[in-house]
Structures are given as C-alpha cells and as structure tokens.
Image 1 (tube, rainbow, N blue to C red):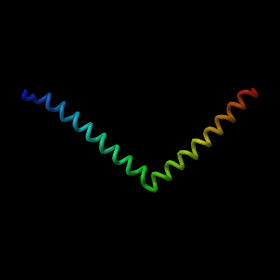
Image 2: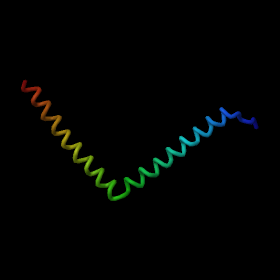
Image 3: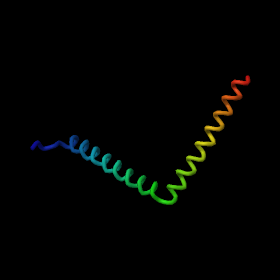
Image 4: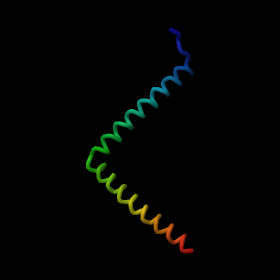
Length: 66
C-alpha cells in the first residue's frame, strides 16, 4: 500500500470529516422530525404553505382583473 503524503492525508481526513458530518446531520434531522417539536414544525409548514397557495391564487385573480 502506498504511503500518503501530508497533503494527501489532509485531503482524505477532510473528506472523511465531511461524510461524518453528513451522517450526524441526517441523524439529528431524523430525531428532530420524529419529536413533538418536529411534528408541530411540519404542521406549521403545511399551514403556511396552504395560506401561500391561497394568496398566490388571489394575486393571479387580481392580475387578471387588471
């Protein structure tokens, strides 16, 4: 096996660190979404989205009237 130089080793360590961070972030997101706060956040997002759809429809109607 080839011995890595300092620069090559730094690159490998950085790539591994990025992958570890992605995995940790994924786990944290999963835990949050499964919690009560996460569920309430999803409900709030849904409510906001439905209101925005209504606002967009009204804006389109106003544009058509002009």
